[in-house]
Length: 110
Image (cartoon, rainbow, N blue to C red):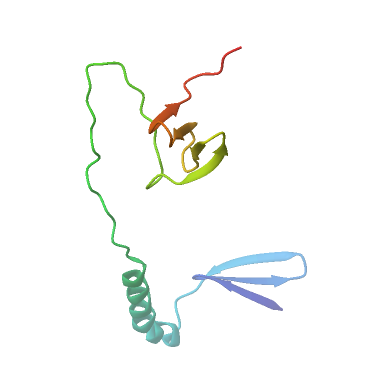
């Protein structure tokens, strides 16, 4: 007869018959319970991570505006023709170092 234990249930399989019986934890399992709980407690303490829940900065304007999110400090990459492209944003932002001006693409034409 093959026996497989899952949790507090013991399954006895013989041929095609499957019987399910409730069993009580053994003395050995009960003895291991405090150490098992101690290990779980230590593991839970190790999983804790300090979280920054600082409130978001709110920008307010009475004029029409567009918010372009940049992930961290702008990272520039040469785009040719004296322009540099900010690459850590989903928005197309170009910087003309000769004029000291930024250009923001709002929509495609055509």
